[in-house]
Every structure is written in C-alpha cells, then in structure tokens.
Image (cartoon, rainbow, N blue to C red):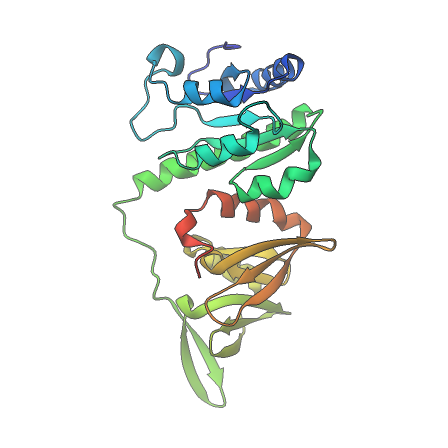
Amino acid sequence: MSTRENPAGLVVLAVDDEMAGLDEMKYRLGSNPRVGRVLTASDAAEALRLLRSDDPDLFGQRDADESIVDAVFADVSMPGLSGMELARVLTAFRNPPALVFITGHEENALEAFEVGALDYIMKPANAERIDRALRTIEKNKLQAAKGLRALEAPAPDDEEVIPVELAGTTRMIPRKDVRWVEAQGDYARLHTTDGSHLVRIPLAQLEERWAEAGFLRIHRSFLVSLSLVTELRMSSSGYSVVLGGGQPKELPVSRRHTRELKDRLVRAPRQNWGQQ
C-alpha cells in the first residue's frame, strides 16, 4: 500500500478504478521526493473508508485537527461514487485534504474547481506537472501550520488608511473600503463603493503591503480584495472575477495569475467568499 516511509514527506491517497491508472499514479507520486507515503484505493468508496479510519498503523500519529492524509489524487470517472461526488463528500470533512484530479476528462475542469479541487491534471500526467501540484500542497500545508501558530498573535491592522489629496483637501480612505485597485503608471486608482481615488503609490507596492490583508494581484493592472469575489467566470477569452460589496464589477484575470487565484479561492473558508 505504501511506496516508502518518509515521516517528513506528504501522505497522499491515490484513487482510480483502473489498475493501470492506479499503478501509474502510485509510481508518479511515490517517485516524488515531496511524498513520504502513498496509499491507494480502487474506488471512491474504499477511499472514504480509508479516510475515516483512525488506524495509527496506516496513518501514524497525528493531531486531532490534522487531516489523515495531506492530499487525495483521484480520477473523475469511477463506478459507484464518481470523483466529483467524492469531492463533495470531502468538503464536509472538518479538515479536508487537498484534492487533485488526474483524469482523461477535460470537460470536467470547471466543475472540479467549483467543488474545491486544488488542481486538475490531464492524463498522461508527467512528473513535472505532478510536482507542481505537490509543491502547492506542501506550501499550503506550511502556511496553514503558520496560521495555527499565529491564532493568538495580534491581527493585522485592518484600520490602515490611505491619504488622498483632492483640491487642497486630504481625505483618509480606509483600506477596508477598497474593493479593487487599478494600476495607472506610477499611480494607483483605489475603487471604493463611493467612487475612485488616485494615489501616488505603484500597484506593486500595494500588492506587497496588502497581501496579508487579503488582496491578490489578478492582472498586471488589477489588485482585488479576495473577500469580495463572488464569482469566477470562464469564457473563450479566459477567466474573470466578479466583485460584490457594492455595484457588481467584472475584472479580467490574466493567465499568469489564474492558478494562484484558483488556489486561494478554493482553499479559502467558503464563508469569506461567494456570499457578498
């Protein structure tokens, strides 16, 4: 059931009803140095039985709040429970593992991200593509651990204000009122519910300063408040997001920023987005 033992590596579960596909997935995952242990299941039902097990011989000793495995790599099309149905069950877990689909069904990609998948890899999956997904899982796990340690630390200053000069008057704009920021050369335009304000601050500087406050670069020209994202749309021209918190606003997402945006949205607490 396991390719090797490495307590410091990720524990992953491979799920595929086709033996050839399962063997390939197990080999690819087990060959990656980020992975410490690979478990296998021949269908979604068996995967759920494993994930609900508390057998220390299978999963080792873990804290009560930890996921039994760090990630599930699953096919989409399986008899009985499909991969999508498995994903919906996992979202009900108190601490769900990261979910990655490895599949030959390209048409399910958008639905996969809607049900919380971290990545969607087309077969045949190569080592580099799998490593990219594992790297993201590893990074998210580290960030989650840091977040737990920081629970008792002071919260970021949500009352930061930005001085805006207008006709000899200085107006103080609270950061919490900013929905998105637009780059305009060496300046940035702050868009709030009551208008827009031009400030002499480069967008890259605001991106760095406001990252911990939930702002994310989605395009070379736009920085948005993730908490206000209500929709992620896909069209023939690419992805876009819709912002709430006022009059709905649709903004484009560049290809280079799409992956990080999806990762942040599907890993964020659901109550923080989609309810504006």
